[in-house]
Image (cartoon, rainbow, N blue to C red; front, top):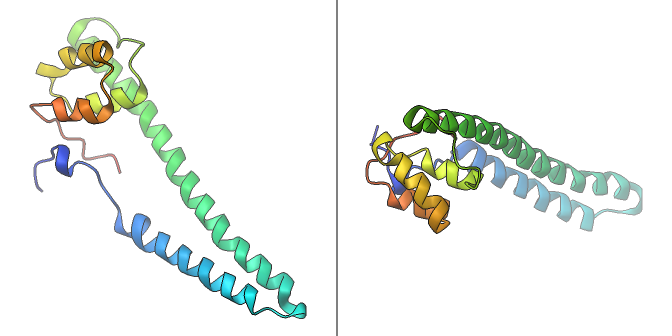
Amino acid sequence: MKQQNYSNHSKMVLGFHGILFVAIVALLIGAIRNLIKATDENLYGASLLVLIPFIFLLFMYFTRAFALKAQDRAIRAEENFRHYLLTGKTLNSKLTMRQIIGLRFASDEEYVELAERAVKENLSEKNIKKSIKNWKADLDRV
């Protein structure tokens, strides 16, 4: 596997982000076409079919959102513990979740200084990641 860095660290899952999404959109288009051509006797069924892709889209969104929230909580705990091991203090409470997520890629050598900079300069997650010189891979997050 290629060494992880800023330019290749994000991960897209073809089956979820691509195929499933395209299939749901195709289902929506087909359901709308079916609704347009519906007659009085099948209008109710055709309108219910339009609802199905919206339910799938909501399901797809919330499945992803809930999993990411759980991962964010784990990352916050891991990075707080890491900071404590390196400094004897917990992370600065002014750090946002997005900043903490960016910091997780920093090596131990630059972690503390980068965390302090993130607070002082209000660095974005993207700027934190771009500031990292020695990238620490996170291969578990999807």
